[in-house]
Length: 434
Image 1 (cartoon, helix red, strand yellow):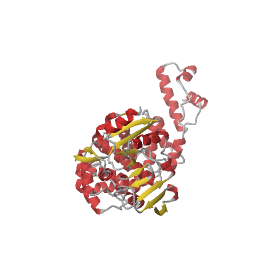
Image 2 (cartoon, helix red, strand yellow; image 1 turned 90 degrees about the vertical axis):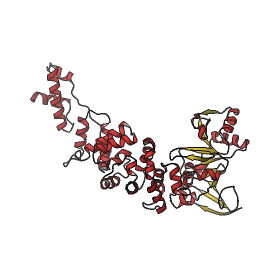
Image 3 (cartoon, one colour; image 1 turned 30 degrees about the horizontal axis):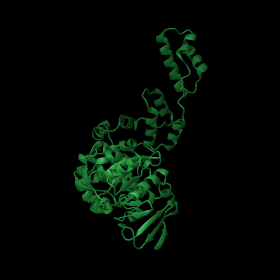
Image 4 (cartoon, helix red, strand yellow; image 1 turned 120 degrees about the horizontal axis):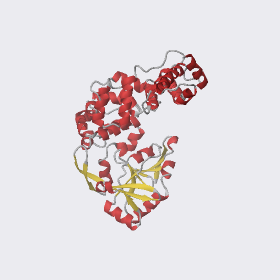
C-alpha cells in the first residue's frame, strides 16, 4: 500500500511513491520513480536485455551516476547497469541468445558490454573490493547489493534503480541529493584510501551539485588533507580528466582555494605559489563564457614554467599546452584598443599571425579578460582576404620577384592601416604613389 505521495519540483518531472514496507535492501521504505526521463530509457534494446535477465532470474538495475541524474530530472548521458549475474553467466546467456558481445577488456573487473538494436549495454556484476592500493582494486563478485553500494565513492552515486522504477538507497543518497550535500559513503578516509582520485571526485561533484561554497563537513576536509599526498601516486591523465571538470563546474574559485588550503595543489601539478588573486578575478570574469579548462587554470600561473610543470605532471595535450603558453605570454600586452576600434589590436594580431588556431586562442584570451562584448564581435568578424596578388603587380609592370615581395608587403601595411577596408583598385593606385 502506498502510504505517502509527494512531488519533487515539477521541472524534474518526478513522482516518487513511498510505501512503508517492501523491497529488499531499500532502507526504511521503497520509493518508485515515475518520470519521462526514466520512461524514455526503455528502447527496444533495453526491453530485450531486461527480458533476457528476467528469464534467467538475474536481477538487473541501473546504477550510480545515471540514477543520480534521473532523480535530478536530467536525462543521463551514459547508463551503467549492475547485476547479480556473473560475467560467465552473462556471456553464456547472451551467446545463447545470439547477442553480440564487444570490448572484453572489462571482463576481469566484472563488466560485459552487449550490443542489441544498435545500442551498447555495459553491465557489471556486483562486487566487493578485496584488496585496494589507492589506485586499483582487486574485486570479488557478490549478489549483495548493499555490499556493492558500500564500495562506491559518494552517497549520491551509490543508489540503484530497478527497471520497475524502485529506488534502492542504502546510504541516504537521495536525501543528500535533495539537500545538495556531498558526502562519502561511510568513513571518508577509508573511501579515499581505496582510490585517492576520490578526493578530486568529491570536488567535482561538489561543483556540480552543492548550492553554495563552503558547505563541507569538517571531518571530510580533515580526511582529504590527511590523505592529499596519496594523489602523488595517481596518473596525470586521470587527474587531468577530473580537474578539467572541476574547472568548468560551479564554485571553482572556492574549490581551487581549498585545494591550496588542504595541500592538494602540489600533488596535482599546480604551482606552489599559485596566483590565487588572479584566479579569483578570472574565474569571475569567465562565468557564462564557456571557457576551455586551460583558460581558467592559466590564471594561476605566473610564467611559462608553470605551464611546462603542469604538462610534466598531467600530460596535457599539445593544444592545451600551447593555449596556456599563449595566454601567459599575451594576457597583459594584447588588450583592447583605447580608441573607437577596441577590437583592432586583436584583429591585427590575428592578421599578422602565421600560427594555426590563432583565432580560437584569441577567443580564449578575450574570455580570460572578461571582454564579453568584444568576444561576440570577434566571433562574428570574418577574416578578410588581402585583395592584391603578385599577378596584379606583374600586370602593372613589376617584374622581379624581390620587388613584387616588397611591394606586396607595403600594400599589406597600407591595407592594415585602413582597417582592412581598401579594395584592390585603391591599393593599386596607392602603389603608384609609393
